[in-house]
Length: 196
Image (cartoon, rainbow, N blue to C red; front, side, top):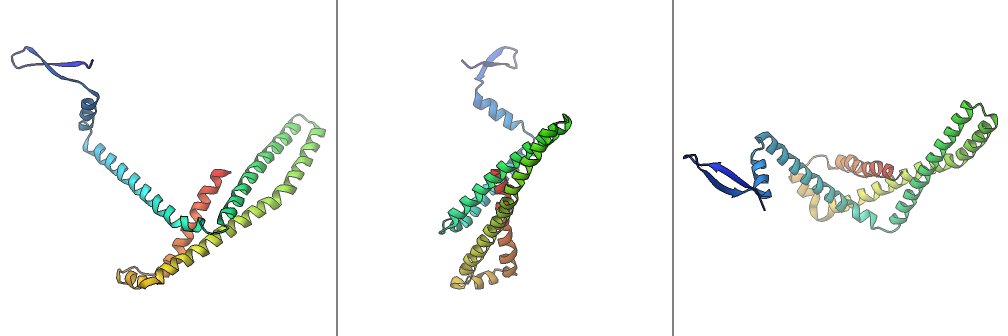
């Protein structure tokens, strides 16, 4: 049963007030917010909605590329190499630990074993890391080339370029080079480390 709030009337007699509920206390708390706090809450909500809208637009622009033939296999290979690279980095850290342990314990046999293990890891890791860097670069170049062509088709289709020039948008060629590069490179740079 909700608690009752007792108030005093002007005559001094206590009278019953409305019950306190979760709704009334929440609205009382929001009424108690300062104008600055309300403005901050509104700004935060607006910014979150803007970020969500931007992400939806970015996914809508990226979806056509990832639905083309061969891109899924290329993406899967790149993600697989990210996993292998992460596993090799872990193995390298274990080899370094073995180095340090053998040195601190003055264990010559353990140090030699750690050296040979490290050499074996480097023989496998060096070409794999180089291949990963090459494949990542090829993935970015392929996506950028495809995306630029896709945008140019839409730019020259149906007089879009005339419409944009009438809207006062200047230097569209600069936007095609710089903005496409940022759009393609940034997601790759942010996404791949998440999987490693």
